[in-house]
Amino acid sequence: MARTKSKKYQGVYLNKLANGDISYSFSYKDANNKMQRVTVGKKSAGINEVYTYNKRVETINKVRLGEDPRKTKKTKLRFEDVWEHYVTNKALSDAIRKDYQGRWKKHMQQDFQESISMEKLISFRKRLQEAEKPLSDRSIDMMIGMLGSAINYWNAKPQNIEKVHNCVADLRAYDRDHVTKKEKRKRKVQRDRYLTTDELQLLKDAVKDLHPDLQLFVSLSLSTGARLGAIMKIQVKDISDNQVIIVDEKDGDERYTAYINAETKALLDKKISSLNPNDNIFTLTKFQLQKRLQRLLNQLFNKGLESNDRVNRVVVHTLRHTFASHLVMKGTPLLVVQKLLNHKELETTARYAHLAPDAGETSVMELWS
View 1 (cartoon, helix red, strand yellow):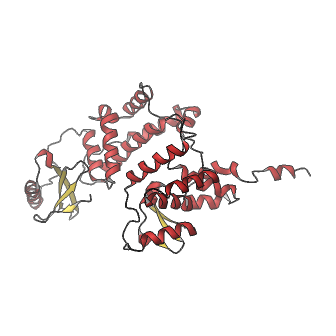
View 2: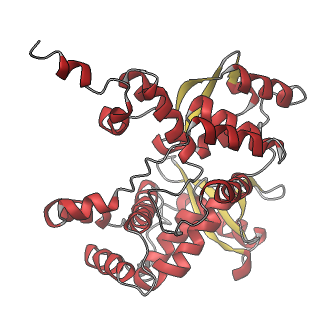
View 3: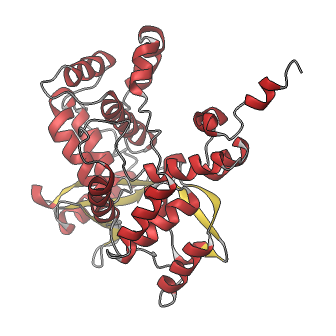
C-alpha cells in the first residue's frame, strides 16, 4: 500500500506494510528550506499518529531555534535498519515485499544483521553454495543485488546522514579478477528452451478452460515478448489499436512500444470494454497468475524433469524465449528482435542467432564458388 497522509495530523504519514503492521513517518523543512522525511517507527513497537506528530513538532522547534535535529547522539547503524528502511519504504508490490522479507529472514539476516562488507558477502555466497541443499548461483547473485539496492536506496535519502559503503560494487570488482570464466558461465542460466508450434497450440487449448486472465496473459506474452512483471502492469490507457506501451521494470521502468496481433486484440477488446482508462487489465495478481500458469506448464511440459533442471524446464519466462526464437526462425533481423525485446545490448539478443533459417550456410557454400 502507498504511503498516505494522516487525516488528523499535518505532516504525518502512514504506510501499511505487507504483514499488516503500520509504519509512521513525518515530513518537515530543514534550515535550508528543504523537505525532509523521518521514519519514526511501527505500530507494533508502540508508535502511533499522536507520538509521530509530537516528534514532528519537536523537530520543527529545534529548526526554529537554529539546531540541526539530524545531529543527534551518534549510535551505531545496524545494517538490518538499512534493509528494513528499503523494504518498508521502497515502492514494491505486496508479493515482492513478502518475498524479500522471506529471503532476508531465511538466508541473509544471520550474515548481515549488524553490518555488511565484501568479506561477509563472499562468506555468505560460499555458505549458500556449500549448504546441504545449495542454492543456485543465480539465486545467490539476485540476493546480493537486493543488498546493493538497499544500500543505494538508503544512501540516496538526505535524511540518512550516516551513509553505507556499497561493498556489493567492491564484490563485483573482486569477481572480475578472481572468478574464473567457467564459474561466470555457470551463473548464467541458459534458459534457451522454447515452445514448438505444436506445444504452443497445446498450451493455448489448455488455457481456454481456465481463468480468462491466463489466456490473455499467454496471448500477450506471445505477441509482445514482454516480461511477466511488465505485462501485469499494462493498463487500458496503454493500449491503442495494435500497439501497447510496455513499462519494463527490469530497466528502470523504461517505456517502449510493443505490438498486438489480431488474436490478442480480440481478447483485449472483450476484456477492456467495461474498464476505465486507468484500470489494470488483469484481475489476478502477479503472484496468483504466475502460480496458476506454472502449475499448468508443469503438467503439460515438465513431467519427469528434475526440479533444478534449468535448461529443459518450461517456466513462465519461456514464453518470452518462444517469442524471440520464432521471430528469428522466421528470418527477422536480430536488430529488430533486439528492439522488440527491449534488450540494451545486441549481444543479449545474439543468443538466438543460431536459430536463423540461414545461419551462414549459404555464405559458406558460395564463398569460393
